[in-house]
Amino acid sequence: NSGLNMLIKKEITAVIPVKKHSDRVKSKNIRPFYNTTLYELKLKQLKPVKGFRDKIVSSESKSILEIAENNGFSTHLRDPRFSTSDVPMSEVYSYIASEIPGEFISWINVTNPLVKTKIYEEAINQFNKLNSNTYDCLLSAWELNENIFYNNKPVNFKPYPWPRSQDLKGCYALSFAINILNRKDMIKWGSCVGSKPYFFLLDPYISTDVDYQEDFDFCEMIYRQNNL
Image (cartoon, rainbow, N blue to C red; front, top):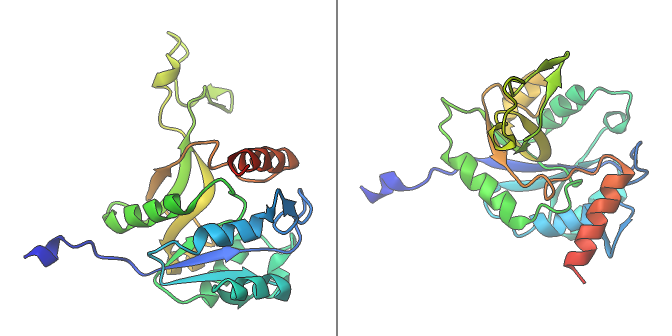
C-alpha cells in the first residue's frame, strides 16, 4: 500500500519568544539590524515555512504582538513576570508551554538571524522522520571540533599521542535556532531539551546566536553583505 510509505506529520506548534527588553545587548530583538530588526527578520524567515500547525509569538509587549498579528502570526500575551531576569528560564519554558496548545512545540529564538526558511523546513522534515522510541527531541547544534577539557581532564580526545583535528568528534554545542520536543515534556522538565536528543547539525557561523554585542555586530555584517 503506497499510503504506508507516506510520512506521518507530527503536530508541531512553532513558539517564537520575544522580550521587549534584554540585558546583555539592550533591546536586541527590536533595535535596528541593518535594514530591519532581529524580530521582523525572523518573522519574514518563518512566514513561508510549511509544516507547523500554528506559529505563535509570545511576548509581554502589546506592540510586539501587534507586529506579529500584522504579519499573520498568532499571539500569546505573556505575564510580564516571565519576561524578567528574576524568573528562572525553566519556569518560563513550563509556563509558556502550558499556555500553548499542540502535541509538540518548536521553540524558535529570533536571535539566530542567519538561519533561513529552508533550514527550518529541513528541521521539521527531519523531526517527522525520527523514531520516537529512539529520539524524544530535535536540537539544532554544531559539532565542536576543538580540544575540550572539563575539570582539567580531556573530554573528546586522548593527549598521547596527539590526535588529528578531524578526529575530534562527539561534542556538540546547542545553537537554539530550533528545538522541537513534546509539549508535556517541556512543561514537566522546564526545558527545551529532551533526554534522547537528535542533533540537527548546522554550520557554526550560520547558527550564531546573538548573546553579546560582538555577536550582533558579526551577524549584522554578514547579513548586510548578503543583502547589498
